[in-house]
Amino acid sequence: MLQDGAGAITLVPEKPYTSIGGELAVSDRPSEAEAVLSVSPIYLNENPVSIYPYLINGNNYFKLRDIAKLINFGVIWNPAAKTIEIDTSKNYVEN
Image: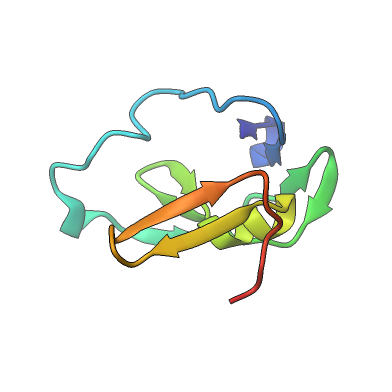
């Protein structure tokens, strides 16, 4: 994910994520973090898309299933392990 000029966010499939610092850190005050709907335009390979990120502490967060549907990869809930699995060899399936 790249943050472009004018506040736009560009999603670039098949490129590794580059951390800009702090967005992957666990908050020491999670109950105090406010999530607001981001107004940044979103692009997938330079084409506008309609998904809605949330801005939390200056970072944009997306619903995993929104990204999975857009880019087309599998998201599976593993109830035994209580984990979410991402499988890029499978297509997205609406649940």
